[in-house]
Image (cartoon, rainbow, N blue to C red):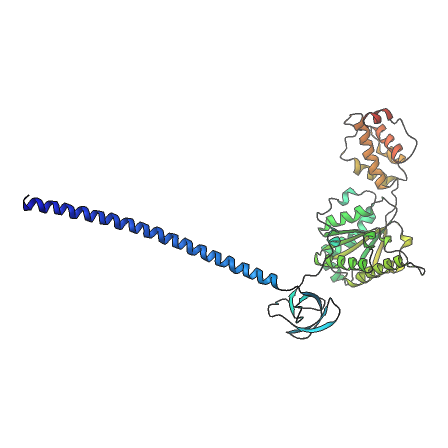
Length: 403
């Protein structure tokens, strides 16, 4: 082999070797990039695990802390010391934790350290779930146009309750205070509750409805506490209307020979009187109450400054009965010969609730016979059945058919 051939072979060997080294170098670079990517991923996972470990250690330390004693702030002495009353009974002057940012006031509930009794946190004020259940979430879908025969009562209650909520400036300019509370009284079924619902609908106010008997509790002081929390919630959710139905359950006249149960009801009544005296008449909280027995109520409830207006909701007369029947039948499919004046004559002495039941029963007579139109005889039969008058041609066989 000559020298030229040997040099060519050596050159090819060098080129092949350089090519192999470049491919090896490229593979090592790719491997380096892959390892660096894995390293970054592992470092990120390490940081994540370290954060979780710190969180778990913090949670573990929190769980190791002993339970705190519930106390009530009696007086604020300075920026770093307060006087508290613990749930165990005694009063202490204690220090404040530096982490408390809320402003402490007398009556605030706090958590106290078991060893030093230092104030560690501020607790939310307790609220009875029964009080929150008194709030009507959706505005009642009752309008004044759906109430018949009570035009003067509607006008009076609107100027007492609705006007101060919508136009308080009028009372400021005139220089008078609007009435604090309104008491509706009258026989059952005459429209006392529906009037209160219509007011709440027209004012877009929070409607708090409670029956008087709900304030009568088993343990001493519970009824008074419910009354206090009800008025406090009304202030927080103002504008609000508190409607107390069946007020005579807690507002009955106080007697000398009362039993222990009667005395507890009287304590609840006294708390109600105190709350009625305490809230601002020009504020955005209005009180409406209803009762069937005005003669049973305690005179302290009826004096001016508490229930300033006492409105009678009477049984409807003949014209009012016809007006109520028109309201209850406006969406019904009536025959052209239906005479509501004649039905009103048959229903003299009926309440608004009776008339609504009468209209519903008339529709049921049509349904029993699979009709879509309601006739005069349906109303006559319904009046005979609902008002307990002489029955007129009641189709007992059809009734039995659908039972």
